[in-house]
Length: 131
Picture 1 (tube, helix red, strand yellow):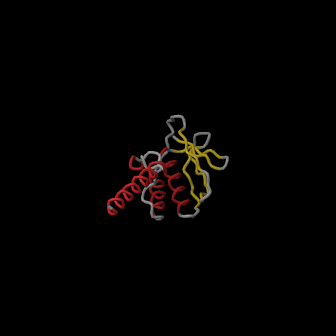
Picture 2: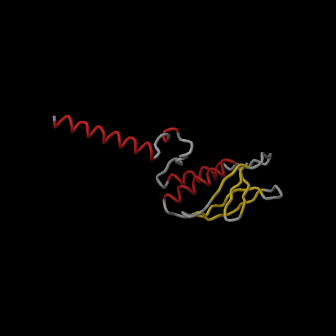
Picture 3: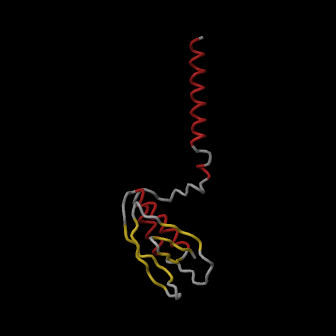
C-alpha cells in the first residue's frame, strides 16, 4: 500500500496505482497538460472509494509507502489506462533518473571533465599541425 499526498489530502491506495499516478503526473508536466484522475482508494473505514484529483504541470504529488496492509487494492485496468495515457505524450516509460544506471556519471562535473579533455585533444592536434 502507498499514500498519495496531494493538496493536504492523503489517499491510501495500491502500490501500482500510486506509481501510475505519479508517472502520469510526470508525463502531464512534461507535456504542459492537465487532467482529472479518479483514483481507486481505500477510505479510513476500510471500504473502497474513489478520490478525484486534478493533476497539472505545477501539481505537487508525493507518493510514499504506507504500512503493509491486507487491504492491498489494485486496479489493473486503471493502471493500464494511466500508463497508456502517459505514452500519448511521447514518453513510453518514466525517466526514473534516480535509479537508472545509464545516467550514472553524467553529472555536470563529468560533462565538464569530458569537455576539458576534448579541448585538450583539440589543442594538442593544433600544436601537432603547427609543427
